[in-house]
Length: 225
Image 1 (tube, rainbow, N blue to C red):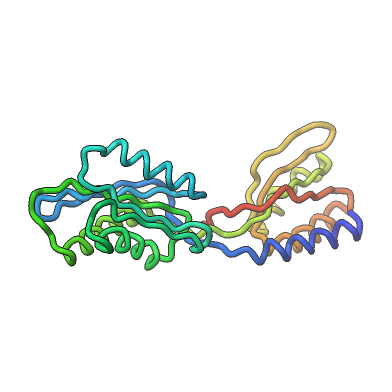
Image 2: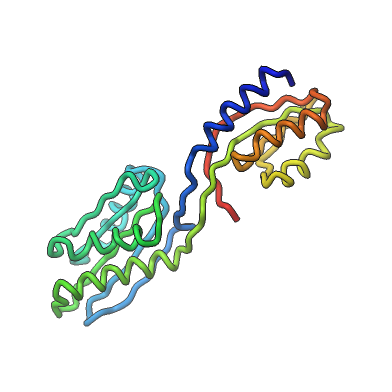
């Protein structure tokens, strides 16, 4: 493993380290409550793109086509993309409160739809704000939240004699093995917190006396458990 490869690794390691981690929900969830005979159902889901968020909103609307309102909000792209819809409720009484829940919880990469089956009693502007906020919060709480940390996807190609020691080295740096291919050598695929990449490369070079190859495959965020 030569100096040129080391310089390249340090270069992209610094770039990836500049990525921001983010807080999002762990998975899809549903929660509901009733307020003055109106039924409010909050549904939350992770969303990696505006297309995914739109697809989730469309699915909920299709499933609950008979509801009076399907209010929605989502935050994506590290908080840079925010959208909401009041879906026929008085302006500002439904979508913005749902969006505010996501903002207050510091979430991104997720979407929430709150369905209302009207019970015949008007709630007033303040009552709507409280009800939609509560339904959104219930859905977020049911989903749970997780911090996603930036990681680098790597592949180490090494001898079989070194392979037995590699998982421990990866774990020592907070990484996780994702898979391996076995031919005349072993190609181990794994991910590490981005700030650990340079130190890992140095350790691998020392452990293998420069014989192991280390290649960057990409970048991705993983849960920080």
